[in-house]
Structure formats: structure tokens, C-alpha cells
Amino acid sequence: MKRSQRRLLMPLGIAGITALALTACVGDDAGSGGGGSDGEAADCSLYEDYGTFDGAEVNIYGTILDAEADRLNESWADFESCTGIDVVYEGSAEFEAQINVRVQGGNPPDLAIFPQPGLLASVAGTGSLLPAPESVQANAQEFWSEDWQNYGTVDGTLYGAPLMASVKGFVWYSPSVFEENGWEIPTTLDELDDLTATIAESTDDTGVVPWCVGFGSGEATGWPGTDWVEDYVLRTAGADVYDQWTSHEIPFDDPQIVDAMDRVGDLILNPDYVNGGIGDVSTIATTDFGEAGLPVLDGTCAMHHQASFYEGFWSDDNSVPVAEDGDVWAFLLPSEDGSNTVTGGGEFVGAFSDAEEVVAVQTYLSSDLWANNRVSLGGVISANNGLDPENASSALLTSAVEILQDPDTTFRFDGSDIMPGAVGTGTFWTGMVNWVGGESTESVLSTIESSWP
Image (cartoon, rainbow, N blue to C red):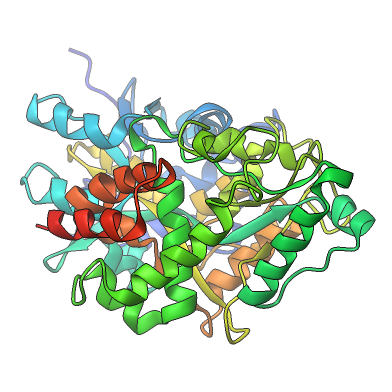
């Protein structure tokens, strides 16, 4: 057999690799490597320390689909060209269920992009997920805050470095529709309630319904509803209660959680307030989250609650202007005291193989070079502190990056994502579907509480 050519500073994935070896190529040139979208030849000097491989293939499994998957593939195009590694990505709406099936069946991917720290922790608990190699650990320590590192850590061992991130709790709207009707951006939750009522009172004249909502997401149906509840728990009960709730130091059906969920219900279970451009309350459970906000563009819906990543869903080619005077814009769900209090999410890359080419890809994905390359392609952000906020594709996403990088921001990771999988990606998701189907708040929360392992 002809031996593959690999030019490595030292074998990747083996103890002894240093942070310098794999990050020296980034430095001041972060973000200039491109993702392969401009048709120009790649600057391979940025990738030379990852090594060169002859015909190697690395497969990655994750939840990222459609246009976002296309941009993901574009984000490592130059890396592939320069290293010779063929990165093969497979996206699935059934990832949360299928990753365990594949692991148990002895057919895990080389790398998996976990959308929930809780799921990463449960898979790591099976012994099948490998601890992060030293090169990834070095990047995590350099480019990610301690909190973000902790989300990928299980029992003191880092298994997955963060990838992309999102600021949750944005409320998307049409600036022109708001201006035409004289609607003001709310600064408190009470003002949001008042705005919702005002829009509903004028629906017969304007044709605009206050909210459009969709919980649909394949096997993950229900998660957009958990985002609503988490945002309201953080804003109405505070960060300490949020932490106690997500760690089960207080019951899932604590009265403070009931109150927060009822506040959400006042908005999205009211038949006069939803489901703009789609149908009645019952359509929430079946409307795909990616399509749920689109009625904002045609003026049949006033507001849509979804994370910063939703910018990538307004069009497949970034053709919808996202700006204060554009077709669509967003404001953060207000806090009670005017502070930057936000929930957010993100992905974590874990490995089932320690082959040199796999470690090279895993290391690249944890770097500031990858973060700048991907964010420059539009639609997403990252909490990587080596990311230049100006690389974001809109002023809103630039502000979201700045929120994540602001030390004064009170940030909490998406609650369902850090809860045990049986709850966070199980009964909490299904409970939200049952809730919009007519089950009471108390009954739903009690069922979730009884499921906590």
C-alpha cells in the first residue's frame, strides 16, 4: 500500500501536542482564510499546521439541515482543499434519537455535533465518546470562556469544544409594519403584554395577528416551546431560581415555574393572539419552527419569538434585509430590570475516533479561524472570543456576538439542553406539545417533574 502523506508537527490526538502547534497559523489572520465561497484559491498557510492527508475522509453527524448545512460545508471547504481531508457531513432531524442508536449499533460517526450538553453528557456516560484531544483542550482554554468549557465537560473531563452559539429570546418583527401602525418596541414584559393586546384589538382592521408560533421539529418537536418557558423563568424568577430549576434543586413544578409558564400561555394560548398567517392555537404543535416566522414577512403576523440563528431562515440566500429599516428586525425579550439577561444555545463537537485526520478536523472546528470563516458566511454567530463581531452578517448578529462577549451579560444556557436527556429532550419537549393541545400547566409540569431521573 502506498503510505499516505501526512505533514504533522507531531501526531495529532497523542499527548504532547501544544496549543501553539495548531493555532499559530491563525493569529491576526483569523477570518481571512475564507470558506471557499469566493472562488479564489485558498490561503493554505493558514491551514498548514493541521497536516496534509492523502485521500482521508472524516464523517460528521449533526442536526444542521438545508441552507445551514450548505454553509457548514462551505466553512471547511478551504480546510479540505489544503489538508486533503474530505469532510462528509450528514444532517438529521432525528439526531437526538439516532445518535444513541448508531452508538449502540457500533456505527458511530467520527464526529458528532451535539446540540445539547445534556445529550453529550449522556453519550459520554456510555464510555463511547472520547475525551477531547490536547489540541482541542488548548483551543477551548484559549477561545472559550470557562462557562462554555464547562458545558462540554463531564465529571471534570472535556469531551466537546463549543462550535456555534445563539442568543435566544429575540422577538422578530417587520419594522415597516410596526411603523405603519405606530407600535412601539416594549421595554418590559408588561409593555409586551400591552403591545400584544393592542395588536389583537386592531386585527380586524390591519389583518395582523400578534404572534406566529411553531413547535414542529421532527423528532425534536416541542423544543421551541421550552425556549419560551426558559426565557420567562430567567426574566421573572431570576438567574438563581433558573439555576436551581435546571439542576433540580427545586421541583420542576415549583410555583415560580408555574407562574412563568402561565405568563407564556397568556400570549400563545390565547386564540386572539395566535397563529398569524397559519391557523389557530392547535397549529402550533404541527407548524415547523423554520417556517413559523415567515408570516412576519407578508404582514399577517406581527411577532415571532426565536433565537438569533433564525436570521438564516428568512431566505436561503441572505436576500431578505435584516436591519432596523429592513424587511425584518428583532428586539430582545425584555427583562424586568432592563439588564442584558439572555438564554442561549450552542453545539459541541465530540469524537468517537482519535484518528489523526479526525483530530485535525475537530481541532479546526474549535479554533477562531473556523469561527470567523463560518460567521462570515452569514446567519449564525459563535461565542468564540477570537471572533470579530464585524464578521457577522447583520447588525443584529453583530450585537448578539457583543452580548455574548460582554462580561456584564447574565447568560444562561438553554435549560432543556443541560437537563438530563429524559427530561430536557424528552418529557419537556412532549409536555410543551401536550400543553398547546389543551393540557393544563400544572399537569404538564407535574408530569415532567415525575420523570426526572
